[in-house]
Every structure is written in structure tokens, then in C-alpha cells.
Figure (cartoon, each protein chain N blue to C red):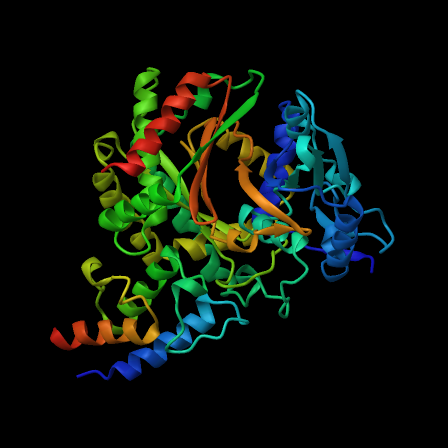
Length: 423
Length: 84
């Protein structure tokens, strides 16, 4: 049925990012998940499954419309669905798929590229526009597309659309976020990105894989340093120490490092993707003296998280996003351009939930491997996403060639690996 | 003396309302971690206990056993509160 759906504040931000990054010569604000399958799947079966899901989620056929105040425009049901393309593996194909922009305005909010490989194997590259959903939902979506045996409960209402506090209360909360930045600026963070504002960007990534035994070791270390359920804090703290060391190695000191910790707003235990970005960022700061050991970094991080939640900064983040979606997009672009100067974020960090137990099969084929590729990162030019597959920890480290050499990024990734494994 | 059952009831209500999807059946015996409870959910629960009972559960008490389910978490909170 044709109609309109609103974007939430975070979707707006992601849409703004998409436009700004295209303007700067990137492919846009899109991310990818790659599956390695033991056998080829039928593209028609995949198209049929997507069409079934589009009946339940019409947003899969939508495109963003309107310049000043964008909304999702949902066309007629018989509109063409996003692409499922088939390729024969050849040299350079992976880069070609990665670098090819989506066309959200034409309704291409995601794309599946099926790559036929020798020995009857196949890789599936799923590319999605970040304005449609966050990485956590993308994992759920891929699982749902690939498995029609997962029972679908009633559609879940995202937390950010639940009844809200009165406007004045939300404005007060939103102000708290601004006050936090005033605190941060006392030791101004500077990302490496500030040195290369207009240079052409090429993103590269590498994946650190941990065996089951190594994953157990990392979890034991996390538990020792952070207590139960402290995995994400342990990962983040280790990454910030390595980032500080990287800054020192390349002679680009920063008075502090700001780490936005993503907080998932998805109700826990829901199995279906939410087609909106259900994430808010909890801003945390580390001074160089906090980054000697993982335990020292965690000792700084944990109280910041508790205090931020005590101060209502999660709600403040939701409130800021909610209020700011009433602003016209050009103002968002202005805010984004200011942020991209490099003083707002020192490192992109993601830690998805363990949805991958569902990803054992995809359209009947066995999933042999699963990797994430993060979004391009104009500033700070480096980031990592932590996730797991079959109980094994994976870390994708992505960087911009302009900002860091491959050797520097590899040293970062190996250092992070070692830090996670050894206390 | 506070009854662990009182904390259990309040915790259950909070978790159903603020943390878990409505499709998830949360009972006092539900395995929290297996149901998707994560580190941020834990901080939210600790804050809820702080706001409701005026104390922060010490880190050393947040063990895997304490987090097994709502009943064990409520029992931990009640033990600490009653020892104060």
C-alpha cells in the first residue's frame, strides 16, 4: 500500500551522512555483511523470500523523499524490489561490489550480490544503506532472509517510538548532552582525520579471527577485568589503548580520545529487524594517562557509563534525536560537517549482539563464514566492529588509506588481538 | 528486613517494561543472558535498584550465578540490603 513513514532522528543523521559522504566522493553511508556458503543458492528463491518479507515490512520497497524534511515514501506494491545480482568470481570483483554506491532515491536501500566461486561454493555480499537500519538489525535481517523457518512474533514496537516524556523534560535532557561536550572540550580530542580533510578516501579492512579457545580466553580476561557481562567494555578499552599507541607512533598526539559507545535500544530478545536505527551514542572520554593498561582504561570507562545512565544521557540521546528530526536536513548537514572536522569522535566502535547463532544456514546452504565490513569513516578514519560467529570472536578493523598505512592498521589490529588475549 | 520476593516482583516488572521484547516470556526463572540481557541492560538494572533501594550492588557481587535469573538477582540484592 503506498504511503509515508517517518524517519527517526538517528535515521536522519545517517541520511545526512550518506549525502555528505557522497559529496566528498565516497560510495555513501553503507555497510556490508559477507557470508561464505558451502554451495550455491538460487537467486530466484532469494528474490521470492525478500518479496515475502516486503509484504510484512513495506519499508523494504521505500525510498527517502523530500529534501528539507525527508520521509520514507512507500510506492505501489508492484514496484521493483532491490537487486539480487549474480557474478562469477574474478580478480577485483570484491572491491567493485564494495565501492559501488546504492541508489536509495530509486528504492535501492539494500542489495545482495551472489558471487559464484570455484568448487560450487558461493559468497553472499549484503550491502545496506545505514539510513535503513543499524548493524544489529542488519544481522537479524540477513538471518531472516536466509531462514524461513524462524517463527515471526507480532511486530515489536521500537523503544524510541514508545510514549515520550513531555517536551520541556526532553529539552532539559537534551541540554545534558551539550553540557557533556563542554566537559570534553577541556582536553580537546583531535582525530587523525583533521590532517586530511579533502584527500580522496579509499577504505581498507582486515578481519581478526579468534578460535573458540582464544575466544574463551578473551572472555575470561573480560570477566577478570570487567566482571560478568563486561565483554563490550573490555573490547572498547583495549581498542582505545591501541588507538593511543597508534597516535603516538604516527606522531599525532591528542589531548584526549572520545569514544562514542553505541547503546542498542532494540528490546532484548526480539528476533526481527527493526527498520530504523535503534541506537544512541553514549559519549565517553579517555585521557592519555588512563590508557596504560586495560584495567586502568576500564576503571575510567565503567563509572562514565554508570554516571551517564544515572544522568539520563541515554534518554537525552533519544531526546536529541527525537527533537532534531523536526529540523530541516540542511541544518543536519551543517552539524555533520562540523562534526567531521575531527573533534567529535576519535574512533568508531561497534559491538553487535550475538544474533549469529541463527546464521547457520542461508537459503538452504550452510554458512561457513560471516564477516562485517564497517561504514566508511571520514573522521577519525579508523574503527573496529566486534561480533561473533559460531561462538568465535571476530574483529573487523577498517581504516582509510589516506589516514593510515596498511602497516599501521595491521600493527593496530595485531596489537588489539594481543591485548585481548593477554592481560 | 526486605523480602526478596518484593524485589523480585519489582525487577520482573521493570525488565518486562523496559528491557525485553514483549514476545519474550520473562519469569523469575528465565535465563536472562540466554534471553538477550547484555551489559547495558545490567547497568540499567543496577540503576533501577539504586533508585528503588538506595544502593549500588558492588561489582564483586555481579557474578554469573547472580545473573542467572531474576530470582537470583533479587536474592543477591536482598542479601546485601539486609546486611546493611
